[in-house]
Amino acid sequence: MQPRALMILGPTASGKTALALTLARKLPVEIISVDSALIYRGMDIGSAKPTREELALCPHHLIDIREIDESYSAADFRTDALRLIDEIHARGRFPLIVGGTMLYAKALREGIDELPSADPGVRATVLKEGKTFGWPAMHEKLAEVDPVTAARLAVNDSQRISRALEIYRQTGRAISDYQKGEAQPDPTIVTVGLVPGDRAHLHRVIGGRFDAMVASGLLDEVENLMKSPRFIRESPAMRCVGYRQAVDYLLGECTREAFLDRAKAATRQLAKRQMTWLRSMKAVTVFDPYAEEAGALAGKLMQLTDAERG
Picture 1 (cartoon, rainbow, N blue to C red):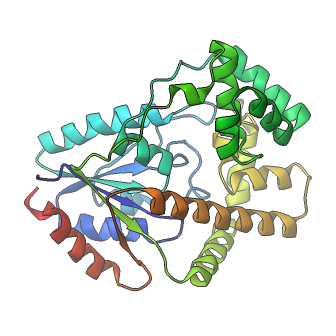
Picture 2: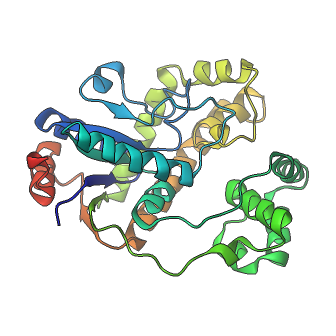
């Protein structure tokens, strides 16, 4: 079966962008971003958004498509990605899907459950309660009405706890009731996982990259976002790793040293979760990005997908 797309997934700082751009220099590809931070306008430094020169190498999609107070769901991503895959093929090019938001990737590969649309009023109430009582307390509330979902969520996973409570309050049904049976991945989307074997090296790269972001003006970027009338502290955009900790620091809630330590720790935790997701996914070919040069990896991926014929 001829692949329709190549998906490159991996934790933050694993070299996904470098590999994708190496492929873009060799093949007629267009890149579809699988990143829940790159969608937001004005969030450039902290999201490691591709530079203007990198974006010019080939067409990129699903970058800068939302303001920071706007929502974008896994279902939205799936709809957009499927449309783009068809459009890219119609132009005689090959879709390269790249990023680290595993929930989006899962939605594209396996489909997604049909959930009720969000009710802004219910969402606002849940977020207000979360701010007042704390997310561990909200997690306890969720456990009372949907123990299945609560059991698989961390007590501070505000985004997923709030969504599960919204569903229950809107419908009287647990979000787990909407879950389908175990889905199979789409065989026409070839998936590659970049999983660094040297965890210590990954952590060093994460730390160095975050220091470079700060040196490049991350705090100024966040300060400008906070001045925007669209700024909402509890929005999905501002819960992104690095941004959340920067907001805390700029509001005087922690020291600069604590900000740096917390942001780097949160990024390491994000990378760990991303790799856990990858290991749980079926039909994923895994490479160690630190063991091979991007050019050598690109050659293997071209053979894996026959993308050069796209």
